[in-house]
Figure 1: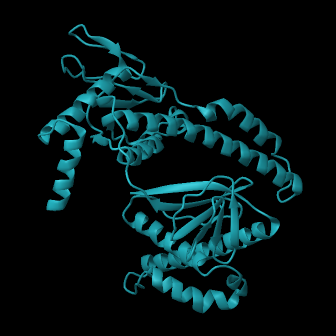
Figure 2: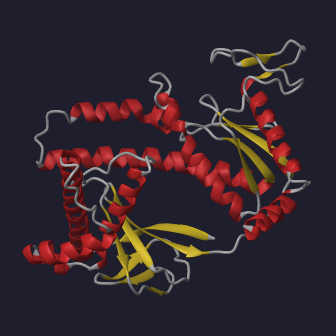
Figure 3: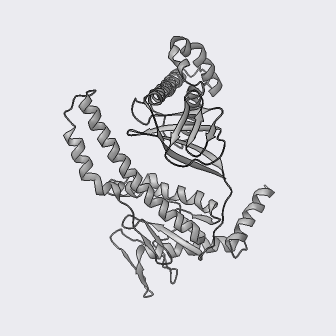
Length: 386
């Protein structure tokens, strides 16, 4: 399986200038390609009888060389793979838009989400150095895995630069303490396991919301583009990075513990986008980061030899009694204790996690299996038969 690695870089002024140039080339290629494709879509919409073929990735690369690079010689100061990878990312973004997975791609702005991708020959020199095309040798703070990546992405967060790449690793199964577990995600507590364990969310945004609001309020009258404006924006970006890092650290610790110690994990397929449409709960849900929790659990379950069972989002895990199986007609968010006519009383989230565990058991038993290893073997057989 492929695993991502990301670490911070030590830079000198020359390397910092080269990074900024590559970011500018990547941003210019993206904005040029996006403007061109939007013009073609608008023309096809206005003239249905005279439609122009939507350009492919190779068409955009040819037109970039023929039209853009001649007028902008500073393109040749950077690696040729940088604008090509931007156009590839644009092609993927339009494909996702046409499939209605995501919204239309947007134009990029200088200083926001700066990043670029390099392709070519990369050499890991020792433990803390990597040689990349066009820029040279880069130093890192962490030890680098001794692999040969095919491409690397360099990105900026506030005033720090990071390098990331993917490499192949072998799954390392760990001994499991519990065979089946259900995981219910909530706003009050991030994760509640069917075993009774409760994991609190970081709630980092809520913790620093007042400080962030105060910093942004103090910066409201600074002249855009001035040195004081840039310093203030950098402070805000650093605080945003701190909030995100605290959240990611909490998610990684919880998902690693769950995937290492549980053989079969049942989790609900939450409609996070629909949940964020609720104005009263959107901030709390975004602060918990449900989608990132599931994404980490998916690849870590594969890495540590566990199985992740995603239960249908319409399964009434909260409304169903985990004792007798009776389903309630309605259940409001204010009701934090689940009470059934059979006399069973339980915490609402714990009841949902127990139901998710039962759903995971039913999925495994439906395959005629009794353990996570057999479940995995059954999945591999079905894939090979297809």
